[in-house]
Length: 253
Image (cartoon, rainbow, N blue to C red):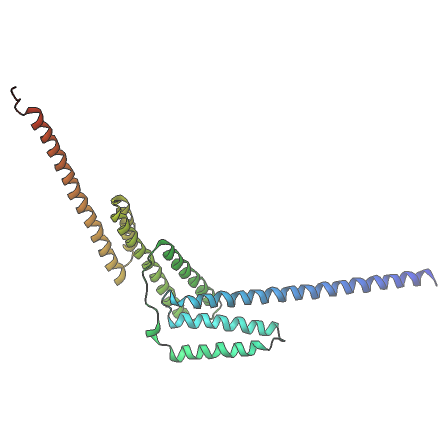
């Protein structure tokens, strides 16, 4: 066998090996990208289902529930395009589609959970975090063109108002707790902070809440004035008692 032929065969073999390696790596990258996309869509579904399950903690509107369910539907459809072998996806897609149809045609406003005032800082923080997550999802869906701009603006405003209400109601609770502990300085600081936040708003809730906080602040100031006057009077009475003792007639023995 001639040397050129051997070299040619070796070169061909190397080309085949390199080509096979490139194909394997390409398939691995495709599979990796596929798995990453599947994991991403599954995470979206899990996170969205968790948000829906929290509808018992905050008042969810029809638009918000429709948006969240559509997000799940789009994620399922994306998974179905990637994983064509999963036969359960078709049934899940149909189920979510039916839920959406029911929401859009039979939504009952009376079933919406009313706003609940947080009874602790921990609960308030949890509610605020939930509102923040909802706003993030809403913004993302609007960015993808899945929710109309007008609906997005209305729902985002509603969530902003809810966020404000959670903060203000928590301020009221903390201020009342501080008053009970006679920490009047802390109570006044909380109320003034709440009033400052509300002063930039002009809606009905903000106006009423600002009046309530101002009334509480005035009440604390009045109580502190009365308390100071009582303390001053007690000091005067004490001084007078000491003077009476000092200048009382001496007893003769």
